[in-house]
Length: 239
Image 1 (cartoon, rainbow, N blue to C red):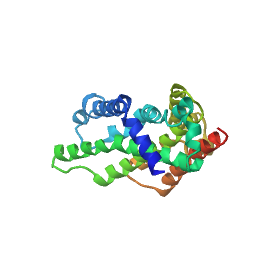
Image 2 (image 1 turned 90 degrees about the vertical axis):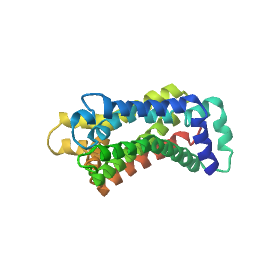
Image 3 (image 1 turned 90 degrees about the horizontal axis):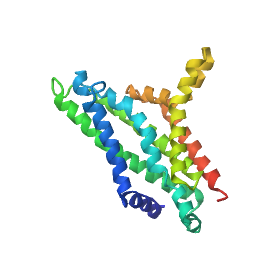
Image 4 (image 1 turned 30 degrees about the vertical axis):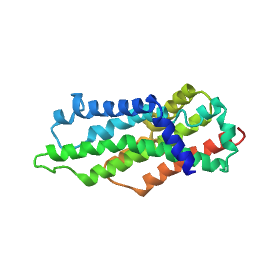
């Protein structure tokens, strides 16, 4: 598994595309947090990073499928999937290795945002005027959403041998899972509306982004990851 994990990481950074995707992600977040007047921390005047945690899931909807689209679809298109299946690894181990590689890439993408927290700490009046507990609770929520999107993106990549199709499908699924159930809940009433909203990733992410790490939210996100990884295994079982 380790060799496959490292192979995936090296393949991502072995082309200009990998660096470009991460660079675009960081530029987009930088513009949102520091430049655009509607969301800029400097314009807002308060020492918090609400803009970062509010807008990053929107960017993740495109970033994570872009990272994951080649994970399996490229193997199938180039014919190396059959070769990989002859390796002394089970299908589950292959899926896990690829998923862990995607997790590492998501973590690397989010890691530089810690500099934003340091900047806010230094810019605060007084210095250090930032709710660090709330920040790290929200940051954990961000990582969990990235992890869930990575599982969804891997599932999309398992369904097709075309990277573009995998990307579009991944974006669609991430969008529906994050925004779709919430939009549907607004059309319903009563307890049904509440139950539908609880199926939305945004519902659980918003709970985590308040700095409250609730085990129910974590279990829901972990369950969704398990479902889509299991779906990837089922989709590839006879490939």
